[in-house]
Image (tube, rainbow, N blue to C red):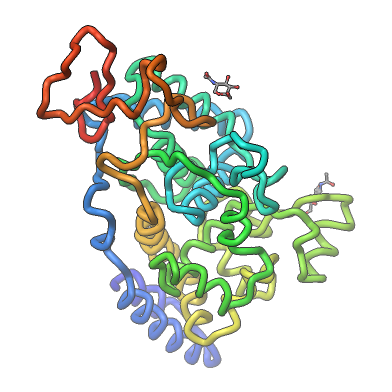
Amino acid sequence: MAIIRENCVRDRGLILALVVMNLCLASVHVIGQTDIPTTTDPLLSFGFYATSCPRAERIVRDAMHEYYLNDPRHAPAILRLFFHDCFVQGCDASVLLDTADPKEPAEKEAAPNLHSLRGFELIDDIKSRIEAICPRVVSCADIIALAARESVLLTRGPRFAMLTGRRDARTSSAARAQRDIPLPDADYDTITKSFRSRGLNEVDVAALLGAHTIGRSQCKFVRNRNVESTTCSNHGNHTTDLDIGSGGIFDNHFFVNLRRGRGILTVDDALMSRLNSYLRVTAFAYDNELFFDQFVSSLLKMSSIGVLTGVDGEIRQNCSVVNGPGPLNPFNDEVVTPRHHPPRHPKKPVVISGRATGSQS
Ligand SMILES: *[C@@H]1O[C@H](CO)[C@@H](O)[C@H](O)[C@H]1NC(C)=O
Ligand SMILES: *[C@@H]1O[C@H](CO)[C@@H](O)[C@H](O)[C@H]1NC(C)=O
């Protein structure tokens, strides 16, 4: 609250007095609803791989750093991949699966993902680096989450610990993705309903849409004509920053733009269409730390949506395919040996599904 009050005091001017009052109210409102991630799945934890694969988080960090230096657009791409994973069936790496049966296309093939979702090859590369030192321990779902955390940090956003311990899904459905991924032209009621059905409140909506601070959009989604003429058609550009003037930098400037009528997507502008939401946008626009704190809190909440933990799901060997069935596959996940029972045939390569730290064979 100290930071907020300072900001309030810093403002001057007669007309601003009203704004300042709004701002202070808004801050209280936002803070009042700030969620410390106590509602997260108790099976997720910080440092889940601390003993089973202590280098895992470091490998993700170093790899993301390399990719980012190579092309900064990898950062927003991975953050978007994380959102699209979590919103469909939970944060379970279902978004990474290739279509196995053409009659049941995977999430990747759904319209909101096809030809626009990127970063699959980065996750595959990180996965193979990790498999090389601790095979079948670290889930693809956790790799996406950890890589998303690095994307925020690399673009100068907040540094924070990411919850880990997710396991990977064995199914993926394009139809479900089609239904569950919020569209860029959603209005306020639609977007809040979509978030609410996943346990995310209106504060989370505003904070998480703040990820657009580093996002880009294809010009075809731009509905704001003023913005379109300056960033898209004039220059023959096919894409535009969602945070004009501060694209690629993770900061609260996105909210400053919203207040200036420079929101790019309909869903971003929708944040200005309700008083409470407008006050939240205002609070974030005036206070970067407030935005950072709320973003982290909301992202951790999102990172816990529908997670598979314990003995559910599997630790995929290859992020694009589920582990193969059949007795010939030494990594067959049907062969789950409870930790407290010694394997019956110790010579057979039995893999204990990585339920907890240190349980890999
Ligand atoms: C795209 O638009 C920006 C202005 O927002 C301009 O600086 C940039 O040069 C344009 N890029 C291309 C490829 O025309
Ligand atoms: C993962 O599976 C895909 C699809 O079968 C295959 O193309 C790819 O080479 C595999 N990757 C690794 C590292 O084995």
